[in-house]
Length: 631
Image 1 (tube, rainbow, N blue to C red):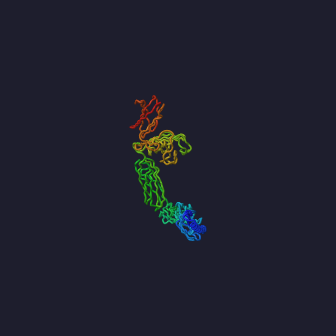
Image 2: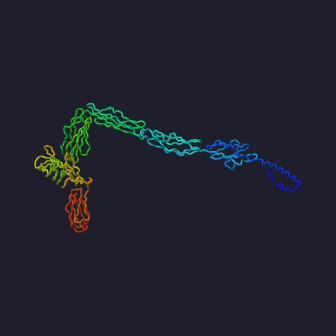
């Protein structure tokens, strides 16, 4: 009700006093009645029993809000004061809301008759839960099995999850579980009241353990008489273990075992690619005997032959009947391929060979019978001598090692020697050898004129020759001489060997390499003197210290500048004498150097004035010019 007292007062002048009094009385009465009604109404109290069912919901779900305020409506707000109501419900009735986040709702009592609301609001909180989510899982795990197990205990980190309420995590195979060999997929599931989420990762356990195998014991078995082999040999069974999986077993045993020892390899392989092996010996003893030789091999040309010629070796042996078939292997001892003759039923064999290089060889023959037994023998020695104008010379002295003199092994001292051996025009070889071991009163001299049995030159630097002579003018003694020429190969030095024996008894009298075979290179370096091995054009190239053939002429002069003397060093692949001359700056010949032997040095006294000079070295068609200064 609106009372406009201002208007009543204003209009009082329009009425007479009596009329005014009547109207005023009427209005005052009405006002008193209205005011009495207004002052009698009171604002409702805040709602009670305010609830949210349920009080926690998942995002997108609904909850029922309810409050009690008898005789009043319930207005719902999301603000404690002010704001607009979001819905209205009757007292005790539900209002359905769907919050998207946790929030607090406020209930207010409202009297529709009086239009009055409760001065305060009652709050009720509603939580909004979040479905679980796995944000990360462990990386795939790979590890080896534990020793002796077909698997392993595997540990891995926990998964990372989010969600409200905080989810619980379920693992199909928890960390610390036992995992078998191979790959296992681990499923992880996060669960809360709003649902679940799953992710997975792989755990791989590798079999890193090989099986073990113990072979059956070795077998030692004797073949029946006359048999050269055995078949159907029972090898037994190996003992095999593995940490897991199946294991296959194999071996390389032959179907037939021949005489001697055969090594059988057993292999155990598991289904994860690992294997182990062990061996078993199968020893077959044949009842037959090995071949024996009644005589050494014989050469169709005897014990000496010319380079480039051919010899045929013949060999015979003894063995029991039925001992074949035989295989005969000829090793010619010259680095060439062996000659092998097989399928022989008799007890003899032959083979031919051409020796292309001079040397002293010891061809060997090996005879193997049908049972695998064999015997070897050799021809000592086959000398392949040089042809043409090759020859060897030597002279000087040496000190033999202790043991060289058979009759007095501890005696040593200076031994002088001189030797030469060269082909004769009519065939064969000639020359002489003198040796004087004064401390032993031993003077050896070849018979005059001497016919050497052979001269063999090997590797362009080693000469071996053999002949006969006397000791102190009496007896019949054989002599073997080996010599190396350092000018051919500087690394071998000038070395020699001398062996003297009594030809009637075969007893060795003197040998600087006691026990060595006749074709071994000498090891004793002479103390003074020279040894020269002169070879054909096909072997004229000298070798440097690395065994590489020298080419042409190489010369040097030192010191440079020179003072009173200079040294000329000449190295050449040729044996031709070297000439040298000194010229001044104007090209005038001022000094002619004496002849120089190749591969040697010459000291020259420098009597010419101080200045710059040229040294010209000439050997045949080769020449070299060098500049030097005289101080």
